[in-house]
Image (cartoon, rainbow, N blue to C red; front, side, top):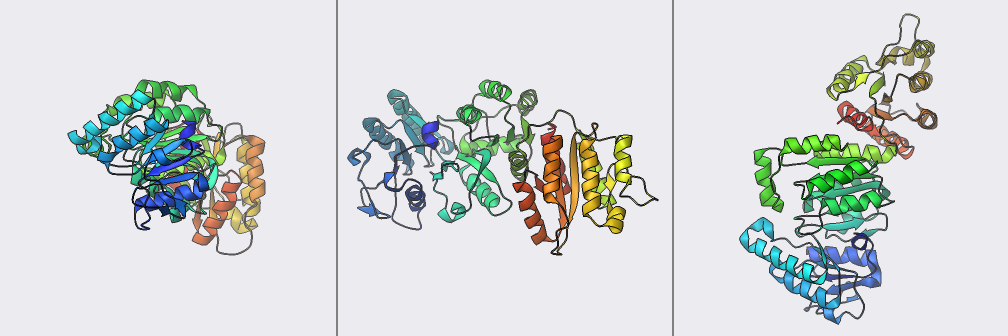
Length: 456
């Protein structure tokens, strides 16, 4: 798999000089990623993006590590024959029109696999947007260049998305909102050859990958996937679609996926400690959270909640119960410490409603005191802090102090914020740079806590 992510030389079948064609978008990305080690192929063009264009792979004067094929499906076997002659062992097929379109496409599928098997070629795709190596800034996808240029943040999350355009949508969503540190992004399409098992095995060994997130419509080799998942301590987050009869039917027409019993998969995921999510936003939020914290999930789920609103505490309590967690019982010493910043007429309970204390002392002292007391409590496994994002300019919270508590006590902390949108974004950036995941909705924050405590 490494050669798919770190090729030295790349050739593109179907490069285009038309700025409105996806073949041109792919060429732009490859030119930026590989410079003069990118070789466009198009018999009708002499130059593309000031790069010499070749009529076929045979005329390229250097060895090629990776060929990317983006031409009509019927022409793909011929391109593979050229790869075989040239000794190219890794090919990404981004063209559509294979098994997902019926018998004619399935026959093309068989022909491609026969050629690949005969000459020892590994095939990625078809019907996909290919691999992206954020760590090395290598983009081998036909996604529009403006989606990613200047926006990628290197991090520890490797994302696998079976759908092509969905992977571009995922990226646009992630890169235009909260910071999201990525290692690899993979669109694998129909999985003619390379599948999620190959990628899981690679990411488990990849030192740049800390969290593995996947959107899958099918599992090609369930037993091997299960064994690999059980063997690693790296968190694995999966959105598996096709849970219903309607979803299965849609998956077959999209990527020719084969139906599977969802109850069997769900049981296997639980045994392999895979975190299963139910929606696309949930997949992003949970994997981003695990990438930000870089903390191994704890095994217990006694949660302390610190809030500026009694009502928010009630809503959070219900969500915590729904996710199989429980509110922590505060130790007497913890109550005593928090009582120091409370009005005389009020005793602290979990959830800790800090509003009366904030009215009396301001936000910084009560938040710091309560957070440290809860973090130090041996009966607390994780903390959920609610912060109000004020439009006022002064610094209301001591983020360095909060980050220090996580290092000192080694317990997960998630923050939910409500208030001024601009302030929320600024605070989220500061907190997540310090390893503290943030949420814009109470339920999303609770789901993050469930992942950090291995509750599914």
